[in-house]
Length: 535
Image (tube, rainbow, N blue to C red; front, side):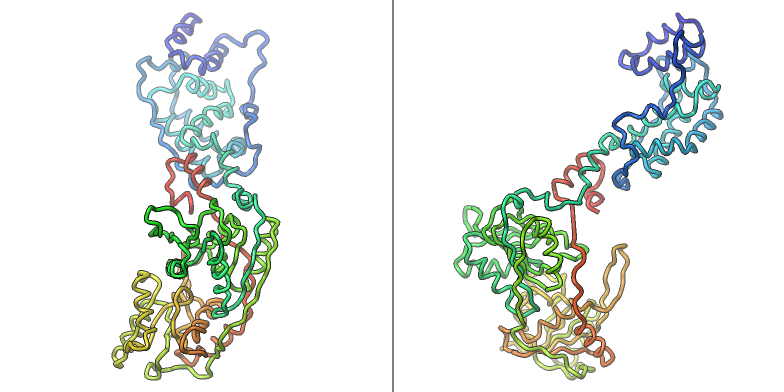
């Protein structure tokens, strides 16, 4: 091909593409006219890595990256410029070149340096190969380099810049992988809350079993403060504090995942707020904050909300209520913020005893009994058997609406109501004031979902058993002494063993990216669903 013909084809390219193809055309000229005087020769593709490459450092989790579709090129109005500059490509030879490129360990390593792990590299190559093999005409630069490789005038590694360009087309996130790496750094969560770090907070841990008065003392501080926030694990508890606060003449708003209630008719925010822990504000300043059931910081699904509240609440004084098992974890977390923890220990206000005999039959039920089941099927079965015996029972389980739970609790607590038996799940473990004399475990095996999403059935933990058993013989109820037993005789020894075990200290706390971090991820991954972003 003559130099004038090359110049003519060059002139037919759109102006915006000339700069991008200059090197390729020069390569074609060298292939047909010999090297220019003083040329340095071929530069290996591995030397093309830019200074922005990560140098082999670990890239962010790429499981969320979804490849975009790049359609093969159809016939061009300008004709196949690459074929005119060189010759038409032999698809069989091109396929061999691409397969050789894919198998090169050096290429795989170089791709990893640019954020293409094994999964992304494979997906990018499949798309790259389909694009080349199915296009009617290729861009002149890639056509020429493929032709050179087929005729041993270039090395297969010279394809890498074109492969990387294609990979960035289908994975635009590769351009911002360094930003994603920074956003993904969850190693120093205290730094996520600058408002809380700007003040020195006083942390008071109220430690004790159920019915020990620990929450009462914290709430008294909350009610006497100029401003405060109560963070509870349940809507029922938030409602209870909301009503108690307003009844005491302390205007209090309510914030849960389902509703927001403002006591001010004009909607002005009250100085006090009762909320579920996930809904607390970490930017609003308060005098006193109460975080209830702090031991739930270990919960695999919701523990992050307690961690967020503990590290992020902007309150002068924070009162934590919960089991002693959480003391070490809280102390360690507060060490990272430079804040000390004052521990106040409480003892149970009323005695509780584990009986030496099981219930064995529903015929032995007495007023004030509560049968605890761990499945709805057991609840329905037990309540039907009680009804057959001519007795009335109240039923409470977790998925009941709050209003229905309160109505059932009121029915059971009413001394004038004929309903004297309660059938419930472990939902009674917190959030309801119930007049229970005896807790009866229908079973000690509880189904749960593990981290892999698989269903497991295991004996209840000591913490769960103590929480449920502690509902018997409440200080404010008519039964001043509590009793605990099982339905089946063979479970009684296991129950005693579980209750006598020491509660293991909490070793890990839940953690979750902040809303701002999720928003930044969504900005960089616009085609990713919210559920995938936070999973």
